[in-house]
Amino acid sequence: MSNYLLYRDAFVIETNKNDELILVKVQSGGKLTVINKIGQKEKYNAHLKRLDNEGKPIKLGDKFKRGNPKYDISEKEANTIKINAINHPNKNSRYKNKIELRKLKGRQKKKP
Image (cartoon, rainbow, N blue to C red):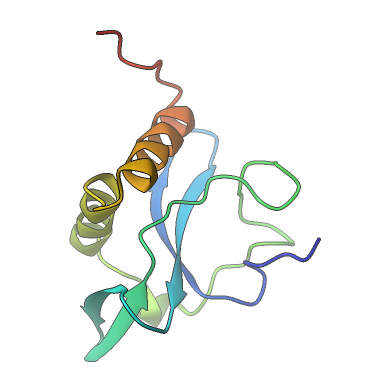
């Protein structure tokens, strides 16, 4: 399996006390959500990634490296991306994104 996040830029959306991350990949193409970052538009796919290709939580290290800090997004932009991911038009993606956030924070599924 190839490591698809090794060569791709990604935004860190959320973290927990164990320094595990949730990422959103920066992409180009058709119907993607756009944010303005440093005077340029960045497109991202609102699918949250919590695990790497080996099924381990994503942490900074050999596999995942921090990029140039001048390209970081603000906390407000990260919250906007998180809200867009939770309110995704596709019901299945919306459900998966909510589960990924719950697993990262160690929360149980809500009971009806």
